[in-house]
Image: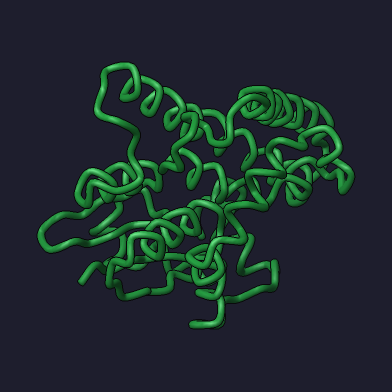
Length: 228
């Protein structure tokens, strides 16, 4: 059985979605990042980067959400495009676009907009612009196709779903879906899938710390408190 180390953040949720879509048996193991459990010795031995998600599948240890999606898709032969060089190229390109663009810029936009201390005007502007630009690329791409790779629902769509759920929080704009209607369409379609409903319900399995208090800040923003 796969051991799935997770929190309720966007990156673990996309892996939860795949596990539920594929019907893979897994043990959900919570890692409460606001309590600093990502720095426990046992977890650090699995992921030296001290981040969730991470999976243990027999002798294989895989960390980074997009690497996990690709690993599981190739292991099961599920949620991949047709086996052509063109389709493979598109899969890798868009999956890495999520890994190196959507995730990092959205995450930093959240950090600087909602959690960073002042002064932060330049950083908020920088990451808000890049997050908006990346989501705009996705929205344009989805204008003439149902899914990111065309007619087939794949791990690229799952990777986007994890972060798409957070777009209003990322941008600080509750009316953002008027601009990103194609992203919203994809988000709504995926969220209505039974597997997505089950993935979201993982929040009921364990109680995570919700307060962003001094302890949580020390655990999540260690550059501010390097000796924490």
